[in-house]
Length: 472
Image (tube, rainbow, N blue to C red; front, side, top):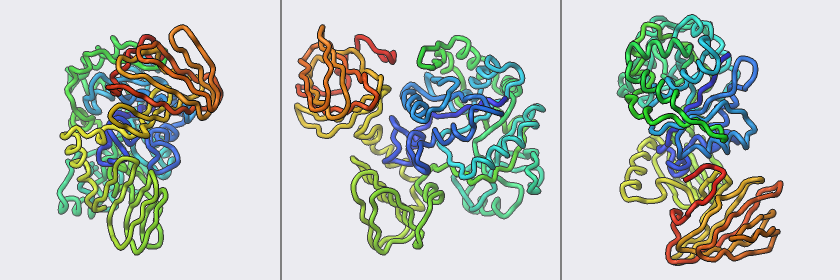
């Protein structure tokens, strides 16, 4: 059996303003109708050759993973929480230790990023099957994409022989850093070079043995982090703090560039890392003037543009080769072929402490979400959505009172020692300092409007007394 391991800790800053650090691109439906994370999980159905996946992420994104798998009705082996991001090699080591515990010495692990797009999942599974025997024989398999253009944003893998179209496993000659334009053009003209997809298949034991040869400190720290991890009822596996002692390094640098067991399977499945708006444009369907749009978009005399309207109408007129991304609180206009520079915009926003760098007006929580509709000096209006069966923490506030109006569904409200059921069009007042909780006992999402008033309205004015999600 193969245990898929989905890496879901990235921030996707080059896809701002849609992707933000507290709700990154893997949780957005960028290409299909489902989030990229769900697309990745569906490629490896938890039956037949595959066990349900492990997902490796962080504290900030843990409930986003829970919600994605819950909404898609997908099984998950466990959600591994890193105390600190240390790149892909330590994450793969943790996955290998867990796989050995779960499936024994013959366990194979398939390392997959959560934020890639693969147009042809069947071809992807065929490539995995082609690499399975090599992985069982101790080889460390990577999947290479035949270049379609001289891309300077990807690393490359050079093989010892050219692919013959049979899907046979090729010996890796070397890994190559992201090249300049002239070098990328030369790579494209040769048959030995592939884009490095960042997808790997290998035996858990084989990877750990090679890691111990080349990075013994990483192998030791990752093992300690797993052996001393803690688990909770929400399927979270919290790695021990010793994980921070792992050197931060990628699988390529730590192992693949050094081992003599590296092999490559050509992957022809419509792969894209959708790392920039230009890459997303390449993966999208286009009209007769090569424009790609999503949402409420009006085009006039526009060509080769990518326009996405997340909120309201976006009209574009008399332009070529641009990206326009409109969300409720931010709009990006950029040259499409230079959309990778968006990361620098995010860095500038972060340096000036702009909230738009981190989160949207809609904020996701384990119980549902809330959206800020209006924020003023001493009052704030929110729309709160609570999923069926979910509950907010038992809490109180030092600086604000709240008024709740139910607009859809049924609410169970506890204020101090009294509990009441509220239906649509009913409301209740939550006094300053009172102990209170909001729950949804119904079968449909609960939607209510919350009006906060007081001298301080920050989210840190929450004293949690009891919480089913084990938040502090």
